[in-house]
Length: 410
Image 1 (cartoon, helix red, strand yellow):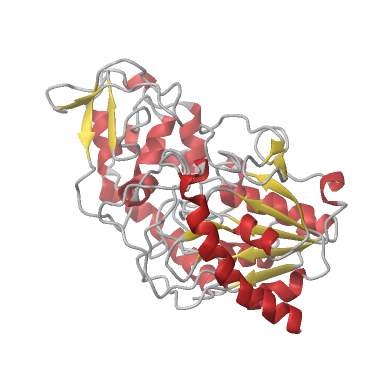
Image 2 (image 1 turned 30 degrees about the horizontal axis):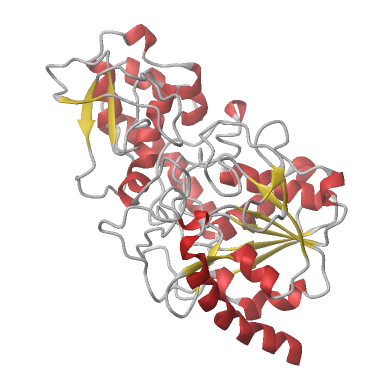
């Protein structure tokens, strides 16, 4: 007991020193840690689960531990600065054996869809196994030397953001191999609402695994409880799950992320608009990849230049090496200065379809995977209004909201 108390007390002293030492490290570069600070403040009274060492250190003592993490796996010290959880666990003599990396990699620098290779963490030398590519689910051999696996990823609250799909496969693997899973919970920046069509199971994919709406309104811990409770894992098995809860958080609080959750979500505006603009990934419209305003602008060479007077040209950039319409002038909209939205905006999708000279090439097969249904594409092609489309979602949303209430922690 005395040893654990010493460790918890030592943590704050350690991460205070660590934050100063890390200032010159690559991991603190603008590519990974600094997201655009414009109009962004973190709610100061929220205590992240990772900071609640007294709640989880006793569970890790004497155990062989793994972690599913990335650049968002951080904790705050008394000075209000952030350090990586992996560094802190190692300093506390936790027997951290290996890491697992989701889409974008352990330090969050890989492009969307880019293969993530096994390797070592560049900062700590910790062995890292990829969970993106052919190996989305940890294999039994990759878990056999673990007693406990920590899951600590920052979600943004949408069905097609693949970290919740990684959560599903990690839970399933832990259940099959008798490994306890501990989820360090984090705020959902889009957690104040639910919206969008419910995924139909025949369209299940890695960008949509469960019958939930596009915007689900759950934290990662709450989502893990839902996966278990709804028996969505293979054969209805359940994971030995422990959620380390946050303190002073509720879904009405604004939380703007101090770290980019992925390379193309650089700031709060992009994260807020992502549920609406990600649908463009399933069309011939560019959603800002290859610019400095990812998911804050949209455009295409095939849109009516008289109707859309904003122009930009996508370039090859870190996190978007080969963006859609690379080097071509695109006509569209700049949304980087608009007020935050609290529902999916369908008007942008509808007006681009109505004002393109390539209607027969507008949608691609990926759109149905993102939507989780064929109906949304059909509704837009038939000329339904945003209001008419939204009405078709209401029954599904009401049913999901009742289910969601069962698993809410906050």
